[in-house]
Image (cartoon, rainbow, N blue to C red; front, side, top):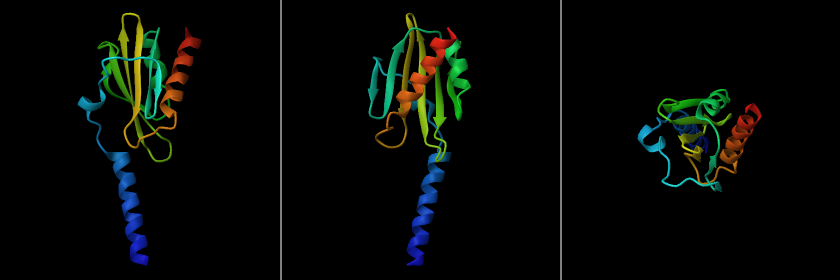
Length: 133
């Protein structure tokens, strides 16, 4: 019985290590769907709003556990990785400057539902952007 418990523990630790250390494929995550609309999805969220990428970029870079995966303000599109506090689950948020504002797409990498975390995070960033403007 001890060996089974040990094997389960090793498997759990290996899965957690994979979640934390798995590389992010830029070609897969630094993209946006053809159409962005304001909607909350089971595994993420989309927003289309007025705003400036430079200002939002500063807000997002200041967010805890968030880093840039690819892109830049100069390129007009940036993808960020934000990791959950305890287990380090990565969520990807891509922001693109368009003529009339910003297109934002946040989504999870692992699992089927993010329990509204991406929508709440994006809406928080957008509220900070509104307050700064």
